[in-house]
Amino acid sequence: MEKHKPIFFIFYLLSFFFVIIFILKINGKFIFDKEIKFVSIDNFFKKEKDTTSNQEKTILSKRLEVQSDSIKLPIYEPKSESELNVYIDSLINISKLDINESDIKPSPFLYNYQINGKYPLDSFFEKLSNSDSSNKLFRIAHYGDSQIEGDRMTFELRKLFQSKFLCEGVGYIPMRDITDPVSYIRKSDESWIRYTVFTNKIKGFSYGQGGSVYRYAPSLKSSLSLNILSSYKKAYLYYGYGSDSCILDVYSSKHKLLASHHINQKSKFNALDLNLSSNETILEFVFRGPSPSVYGLSFDGQKGIQFDNYGLRGQAGDGLMLIPQSELIDIYSKTNTNMAIVQFGGNVVQGIKNEKSLNFYGNMYKNLYLHFKSALNNGSVLIIGINDVSRSVNGIYESYPNISEMRNLQRKSAVENGMAFFDIYQLMGGENSVKIWNEKGLASRDGHYSDKGRAIVCKEIYKALMFEYKKYLTRKKLVHE
Image (cartoon, rainbow, N blue to C red; front, side, top):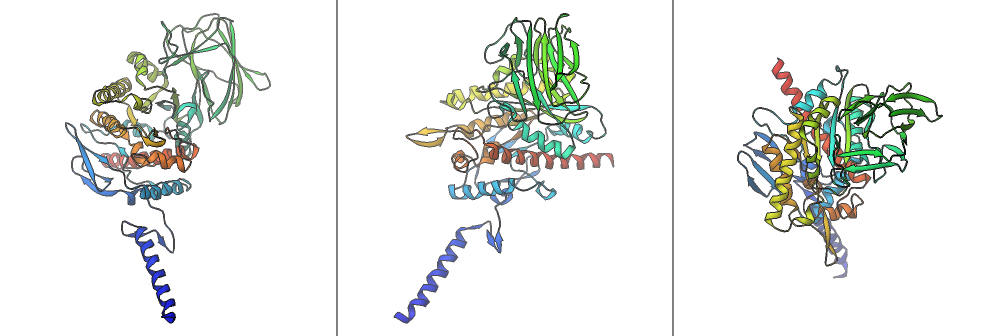
């Protein structure tokens, strides 16, 4: 018996390895095959044909359906926690690599369905395709809650598009905020008072394009210092309700006067080209005289694309409907804003107690999305859905109930009304995925992304948009041939 022990040992060892390899086998491909191979998004989801939209999408093997008037929308079901771990590790490792052409492929998370002969993102893509030949900059307004405040997420998207389309600048800068930004350094004096459509509302004045307006206390003087962490070609002041005795002086870091302007236009919204004598990145703005309504500043390239960040902490998003559509139409026209990205949902999950409250928030978001779509006229709207959010249940962190249902309603409203939708909840991995994102340092338990988490999400959004852009260019070419 003793002489057979080595044979039994080898047999058990080989059996052990075969079991491990079988466990790690995914979609018929081994993870270990001479070198480690990571599970791609395409391998994580099973491909299936959607006959309604006549385009391929990748979905999980099991699915339910939400029946709308014209479109069946798939609902993804999360896989096991162990497979989610492998999937999220793959996202982490993929995010560390440079994006190349082979990465631009169909995304299971972006819905850009044709409605009445038109794809929702085509207006955006048309501007993008003409960005090289056009001498006019066009803008994208990114609205959201604390997930994007301080230029978070927007900064990542801007960086990716600027690298591809050779643009520059940091876009919109508020005069004051409750968080530190990532793309510039700002120091405001205490005279600035911030009013928003959500808190500290102000009667008789407008809120600009982002839902915030700033006025300084009646000291008849106020200042703001900026260090712009990017090159730019043009600088603007957005304001309304000026007066003949209000003057803005702009100084360099060496207190050299770069520009001086009378802030005297009395209309609700004005975009003043500051015509700085040099494009210095360290600047001081000094306002003298009665306060106008200041909506913010902007630092941009001469042409191309710009992403403006309008983040408002702790809000559901409905307050933005206090900005009248007539004003948004005027502002979007004056600033050449062609697209809105709307990203809300995390702050309503605590209020969803039953089907009635779920439908209430679902209708609220439908109205909010249509508010921006109508204001943009022929522009594009991209809805970024609710992400996974958890709370403690008997000491264990679990997703809030009804997040999936909230996502379904957001997606249904977007798709049925000619808007694009990005399913960030499913990108994360679905229910309780935020637990794993938190364990891997990608997000907090309440769903706020870390720098690494934001990089992952924004790269996937960018790649999905670039694939749809390639499809648009193909359609455009076929039309002209």
